[in-house]
Length: 135
Image (cartoon, rainbow, N blue to C red; front, side, top):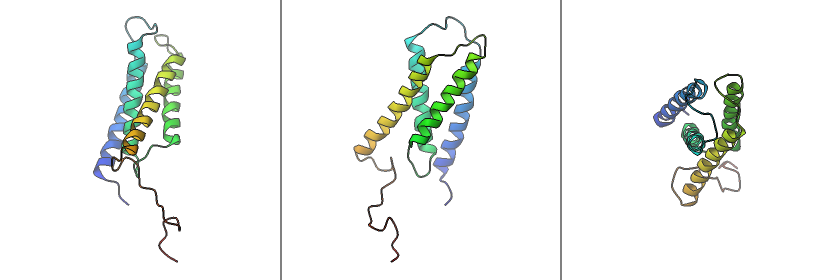
């Protein structure tokens, strides 16, 4: 089944977003690298955004633990790369903020699904044959 224009476009936006976030995460920064609540909010917001993009880019629509694990692995990879740069530093608190953004995205999608918003997650097949109509 071919993917929809929406899914294809969301995949392109996701790829571009990953490139941009990677670049912004690795370039030199001005000012202090001290713990800053605004910095953690930016991390959480970025990973909330990525979580929603992953949901939109999946076909059928859905967010799985695998998606969340891949986003966490991406964030850990960024932190590992930052540890190798003299102008950046590795931060466990950044990873916690990333995880909170992913969890917030999952919770938001779960709330939308629970509220009955159509299309948030694919409908579960409740037929006794597991979807097969053949006997």
